[in-house]
Length: 385
Image (cartoon, rainbow, N blue to C red):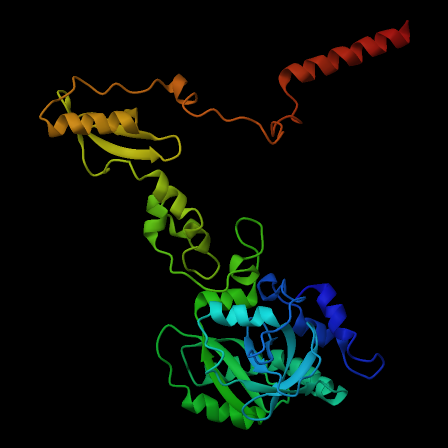
């Protein structure tokens, strides 16, 4: 949620009533993927559509609740909602007609769905107890990790979320294998005197909850805007001619980077008429095998089996297809006629349409240094004269 939304939310609470704004603001602040824009706020609701509001909680947890009491809710209001057991405290993220479209988009039939209720707008006592619950989360997580280590459980507790009334705590953990945490739940319940719920998440979800900066220098996509994780395979790197280096392909979650899928469709479309790289080119001098490909320049490099792999010939995709058609007819070309290195750059001409200058424009070139020295010497001579 943006800082503006945090300020709007805090306006619902009268100042000077003793709550800690720092903890509440930390709970409300989150990544951009939780921010929702209601572009239908000026459109009236359908007559048969119940008053449903989208309520958000810590990190990426959201749910739909029914406003059965017809409260005048708006985005940013802190409300008390039904929970099992007790009640929870959340923040209104969407109301009105836009909620119906989100339900349809998620494949939920709002007529047959049963919703938990929104009890009331949060009172000051609710805010104070919620603030106390938020303050307990960090130390609870550290203590829970120590208990799991003492029980020798192969798991990692990544986050803890207390319910708004402090009667329940959700422990998010990651584990490679199935974990028997029945003993852990007993110990945690005795230690913290709350109801315990364990939720297993994946490495990608944990990275999204914790956040960080990626190799590109920007905030991690999983913590910024990704809501549904799509599987990433090494085929995505192969189609894009990316080196299969695990250190470069893996993200902070130790899984393949999600960004490998971003341009995959573009590469697949560009390679529709590309020949099969496993097929060698047969010539009268021998067979030529594929070495590498430049997809967007539509160039392919081949080397003869009798020559060293460093001695490769650059061919266009159309020329390669022609040779393969000749081979299918039983015809063999004399040799591979590659593109000259000097003419490769002219296959695709890049223009500086964005007005970006050379990156080395501020560096001192030898000619520039000599010119500067000459100017300095002329200046001293003028001074002496």
